[in-house]
Length: 289
Image 1 (cartoon, helix red, strand yellow):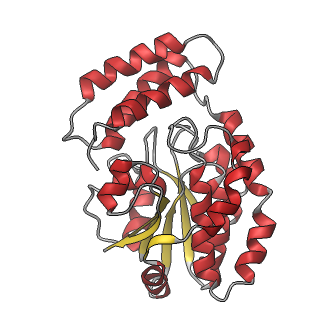
Image 2 (image 1 turned 30 degrees about the vertical axis):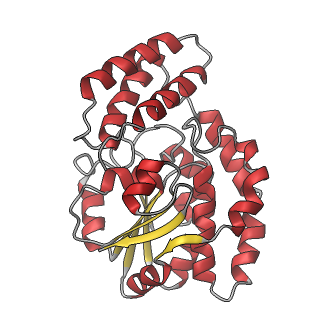
């Protein structure tokens, strides 16, 4: 997906939000570095995830902070964990446990701090939980996804946000219960509030999957030019890639892949919603083959 004019204020709001998290007084340096990089890189013909990656790299370097979201990520995982037992029972009691687990996996995608299009504090999640559970999926290719999984031997699962990944465990359990191998993929370095390897190990994601790999470096979503040979091999042998969240969609939507991709997310902004043909705020499962 290419840069959209709406990306400009959204990206800078995120930069300002995260620059305050370390509390080291380097907000001005982070904002200046990000603005200079954005001015150099901005083009409405460029991929939005790749431009955002360069802007955030500049901001992180200026902040002199490797993981400014660390405390928010830990809190998001703690908050989400408190709902796991309830949601697991809900899935088990559903007439279609797989579809219920897919729906549950979308719920945590609202934990997207500092974007201005979701929530900024994990404690805000409680007030939205009931509404998120009730929300129907607007574009729903769940049956298509299940059919592909049943015909596959392995699935590559691209994680997105901390907190959200707690709910992803419940969907992964359903996939593995079908006898399928699941390889999880987290960010190669801490970036935003996304799941990096330290976060994955902290919440036991490594125990939920058959293999756990990284995207290979500092990148919004997944940069296919950055991934290592092991992940390339896993993607080639997979029957489907499950890509959670908007960053994975923005980064992958311009790629020509030999494997179907199932995008599972909440479309939290107009550019992403428009490119997918849904309303802003929609929950969706869209399989592109």
